[in-house]
Image (cartoon, rainbow over all chains, first blue to last red; front, side, top):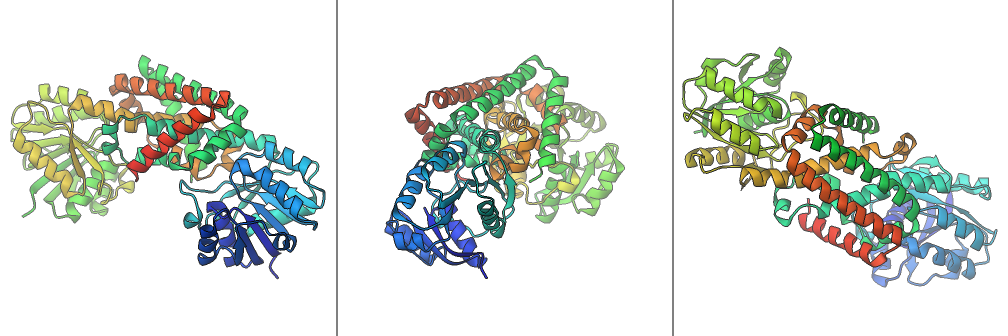
Length: 282
Length: 282
């Protein structure tokens, strides 16, 4: 028996599409429904085996028959999509999202959603610099940290079921308080993203032709969707600024050490970073 | 006919070992000799097919029979190794290096070396966060930018032959003035390295368990040899400080935009970085 009867995925881009493909390949849901803004996306998602059926408008019948609704729309559309799902249905079901920022989403949805919709915040730390259904990959979540952000108001059974969802597609479950999630995400995702952006813009044009794998790797994520990252920056502003300030301070210290030729300080910093990175090993 | 009769590689770590393997596989040299500090490295380099023979001491006979000597020792050992090779030989041959910093090396070697040793500075922009003969890979230079830094004093025939060396192992030749090389290398390699170091040190310990591919890619090179990078920072101090200052200024501008919620500025910066990175596409 698949753990889910019908899963509705709202937004079938990289994340929603990959989830649909993984659910179908892993036989985790009997039926996967997808909703997208454009008819072409729905067609492509069907062709790629991400969804059984779908539409460009949220369909109350399909939503009502679902035991799980996943919000995989851009960050600034999550709250309005959840509100719309609640308005169109009368049934009870699970709901989760896949947004990179959790505190404002979880706080809003706990206020907005009726109790029949049992929401659990999710953030699968998976992705790529590409976006859209064509970049979807059923293996995207394999081995990826999948953070769940339950609160005092979270239904324990719902938490178990959402945990089963991400485990089922290969994720490694980690539970975090939403605020704590946002602080850690700033450090390991949002600020590295902004650093990649600044690094991509650093070289003069002529330098690009001599760039190698170091530049390639450190800047890869700068090719990601600017609109989505603009929204993430807005939604996690405080934590991003705090972490960015620490990164800047770290770079200023490095610059001081390089300028002064402080071999000892520099070597100690380089060694600390090496040890850190080797401990992370990925 | 292979373009080289005998190539002596001084230092058979990642770069020297990879070069030896590529030379032998590509039949670019009839014989490859390797010199390393430790007997175990020489044995391992032979076993891996990187060299035909080798020793822990520079052997005047072997050096004298070489038409090309490659200095692949750590940055701070290049000048003393070149001096030693000159002292031990009386023959005429080509010499090149593979150091990440060019101006101080090229300037010194042009002063130190007798005219019978025709030196051309090289920097193959290839590598990995690993080091040592065990990480050597005959495909390391395939598609990599290989920078040659001729000066007014460089023998044109020697430049052609060194160009043939790096082309032969798969590199893409680019000629640059040594000073210009150091400025560009700071922008696309040395400062991205220091940024990776600062990013690796940014997250609190708990954040490492939730880090995904973004953190992994942006920090990969921070696992590289701290001693070598300390030397690079010392040798290219001025250019690194200038580029680091620009990176810091870029991050401060990003922080201001995030803090102020300047969606327009932020979006424009993210879009510019995306366009840059897509144009680089690697």
